[in-house]
Length: 395
Image (cartoon, rainbow, N blue to C red; front, side, top):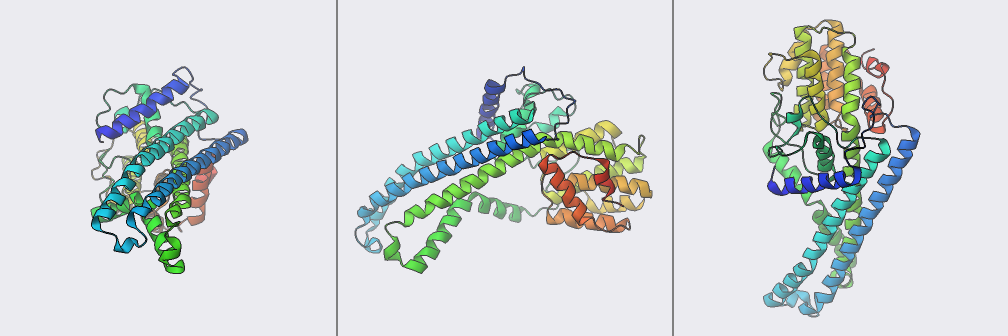
């Protein structure tokens, strides 16, 4: 965690405190993950307005940048390809000086919009942004969080979602989220994601130039950035708000689903305890990400079943071997936990689908593709959860 990132997070948490205050604390017994119709309408309205504001900010800033670019084009003369290096250097320098303030303003407004909208989402859904976390609070914090108050942890988790700060890659609970990941693949994916706007603009300009010709486009080609930037800013805002909502309702949903799993096993055997921990560890490794909801799930699981002496909880082959040693009823509990862990971060990746398929077949059961999607949709939509949703996974 870099110092710059921590400053941004601290500012976001401070903003939450100014808006919400510590006095507003809804009853913790309420099912936070369940969203009633009124709450859903309010959340949709907040999301639509936030996405619209993000698009407008992106379009205005990109438009001003395009105007500056067009205004400076006379420096290159009638034929830019014949302009001198000095003319190009002057053009690029002035363009950069005009663009940097616009980028700073755009990012500031985009992040403020996301942070303010996350606060509105929490208020509309009755979610407490500031709450004490007695169990496992150390695992949710990043390095350098020693000065944070206990009740700031949940607010910081939502702030990171609003600011699109990635989850920490470091191992926790003896689980390394990058155990099976290719560092080169992760690096390339990160670079492509960060450069998404520039790459889209480049592709659009290249295609339009080939279609209409460079001379016809030269006067207005900078304005191609306007709809592209507006679209990307809107998509990024939508992604951030949905991630924040998922992090807000995830811990409550995880606790209820875990209660369904453990209800038939009030005193789980050592083998089952190991299998449950390995199920979550395997999901973390296959997703290559330690999502806050999975941290909460592991924290709650350890509190309910106690510690396990098993090593390498992130070793998928060991999880499969562990499944073979379980009784049929215990296998169901382990499979249910695996599915819960795979859907709890809102996405089911190819690696997660593969390990679920293998695990179910080892237990002599067909992979429940449709039922997994139903559970995932219920979680994302804030539907009421029920034991039957898990029973349908293993009929």
